[in-house]
Image (tube, rainbow, N blue to C red; front, side, top):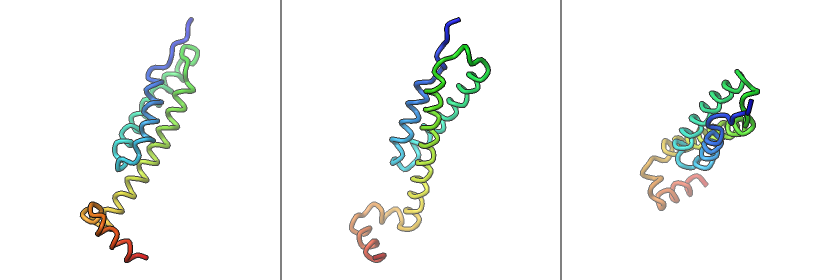
Amino acid sequence: MEQQKLPNATLIMVFGIISIVTCCCYGVIGLIFGVIGLILANKALKLYAENPEMYDGVQSVKTGRILSIIGIVLNVLYLLMSLWAISAFGWDALQDPQRMQEILEQYQ
């Protein structure tokens, strides 16, 4: 019997990479890709666990899963930092570089 590639193995890896790369987009876009990649990876690993001799490419699924987890952590940290900055300085201050400079000079 010929081994098949696990479904969505490449997509899981791509979603994990995208979740890391887009962590600076306020933490929202990368978080979505990371969660989707993690869900797909868990489904693929369950499928592999049921019949391991039938499927190939489990290593790329595991790598994509790890990348998705790293992306989720980075995105959550960036999202929390963004929410803190908005609550501490206000949205208007973050949009105005001159006012932000004045606020930062007060803290020094």
